[in-house]
Image 1 (cartoon, one colour):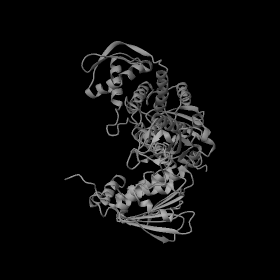
Image 2 (cartoon, rainbow, N blue to C red):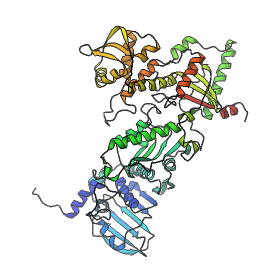
Image 3 (cartoon, rainbow, N blue to C red):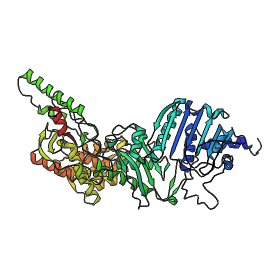
Image 4 (cartoon, rainbow, N blue to C red):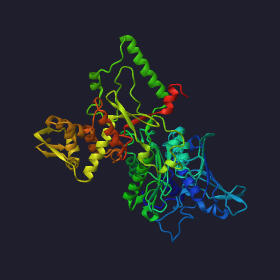
Length: 621
């Protein structure tokens, strides 16, 4: 075919494909316009997944009647002009393509009244036709109704998902926008049913609770931005008691613009590192504020990706903000009331049943204890098993803290981890696994392995940072044959092993020779060549490489996973009998840790059985 210029109608439909991919794309562009217009309330209505109707109503400053038709012309905008800096763009929209692109593939009607006008106007554009404007009564603001989306583009209509799936995408989008802009009231109605209704009270935690149906808002923490800093973070996070198998509950914005950024999302995960189990992800809404000239927003057709001039700084600000807030607010996990009743009742019934059958006091079988204790792989996020008949082990997950104790408006906002973890009085050891301690708030059960693992992890990491890692030579160097996968892992991190205190050298092919191990491993017990080999192989198996799909590492970088696994080997285990002095030493060292609430792999180090719960169980209240 000869080269020729496309007709305007065809060119508009082709151009619309870059901006309008599906109903959610239409909703996003219209919401962006509403926010740029200063709206404090935005209503979104959807019918049949957006195929029949998409309507967005706002109370912004509106559009002048004589400019309404011009708004549907390509590249017509009030947000940039010849003098504008296309790098430092403060508005969400700026290209002047949203309305004309939507109008090219739908029957669209816009009704608007400018804040300074007495009357409003209505403009209709049917599938790219000439805009028709008539006078109309309307409140201040703008209402845009989009009907019969993609009727004139059958190929695009064919690739839409079911109405239910498209509605779900719109619900997700509106929810994310309402999280970012907690100052705006959002309401979403799908086929006549209200799906979302946010308060718009400038409270990110309240918006999170509304979008994700969080019952106890005290488990959500607002992030207070440092207004004096060029780079700062606002938003809210949920305490580690809430975690998920996917990253879908992490919402990222840059200067109020919803973006998809794997790297910034990973910064949030790094902030939660050590508080969540492996491959579990937090709930958070993060709005990173950066200088306008530090970010280029004109790099993606739908403006969902941005390019940073100093992305590393934005990454570190997010990670450090999240980590510091968690260090001040992450509580010791409590037993839920239901679990208290269940565990106490089950334990007592089991004990009495055994006593009736044996006519003796129940005894703990030490051989069973040893077999049930933490193995070499006991750090993988699995709880210690029950060790005495029907008695249950303490639960890994618990209910949230009491309302009013976690919000940033409370007095605990500036509390450090020493306030989160009070001074404890050690009572003894239970089941050769748990250290029992108390303070005025109640009774603490401390997992001796998880607690000691946290202590050793921070000790090893501090020594590595100070370049003071110590090694212990083996009397009999050990030659180890590695599988191809283990060889890849070792070659990727050979320097990390050296920095941690290992002396390992190639020995031909896939073989390595271990000459020395870190002192922290040799200190627990006299480690021989066979033990050194087992420790190395387990560490190589435990370390994970970057995710092949996202290109990002796991929540814990494998270099730190190396230190965490070394700490696991150096720590006491479930089944080890401890003296009262050893228990007190572990508790004292745990209280001096930077993050005492969880082991490096995210398992809780302790659980709290409150005095109030005990009084209820014994009928004292």
